[in-house]
Image (cartoon, rainbow, N blue to C red):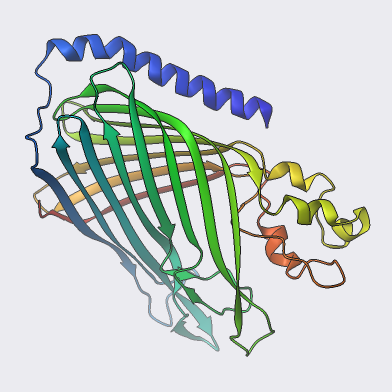
Length: 347
């Protein structure tokens, strides 16, 4: 983990060094100027679909499928005054996969499974004082439309609810029409509310658990047009180092035998304070006004999902050891999607 953290910090340092090197060049070109009090909105929506189907007597064992994803990306920026900049960003995405199965010689469609799900809203106030570093304050809300993590197939809407507030300093290295580089570092607090099923199916009875932590965040956002301005590249590298976690006392209260019975490592409390890494990249190009191609990649390292609170029973055992065990992810997670679909920019 230490090596992985060093690699991430090295990557961030290189990115910031690139910003220093390019900021001098950028200053020689015309900088982007925002009119005070005016909103600069951006809104695009899209639908990506892949479909195939086969007759009952089709040879080869192929299965039909329908994969669809709906996306909505929006932002609105306003230079409220000479000293205050306000940026709002919204990302919504939801998609499902439908597949055929062969049952008694006939092809039937299985129940659709979720393939993409995201709700991400962030607002950032940057105090543009003309200094080398600008103070900032930010708030962020994250969730998903449908929580399908229950092993018995029960679903929960808008679960979990994640909130994050941060204050610190920021630096704009590049601010042009097609290229932007912004980095910020500060202290952040996170709160999470999660609903969990408390009884076996068919019961849908739930209870709510909350958790919180705090630490340092370092976020770098970069946008540029590459390949002769035909491809838009958007990248965000986010590092978060927790210093405290509300569930640490519960983990420390568990005996070595209780941890073993739950399938957990004896040092799991240390996982809650491991460095979190989230690196997202989007490469998109418009073939026509409404047809686009998008390559999306995301690498996440989160050794323990701090949104899962290790609640204890009266006898000291974990209430939900399965969920706690599933919150441990010792290896990094990687996601990649390549899609062609319909995308329209409204603003």
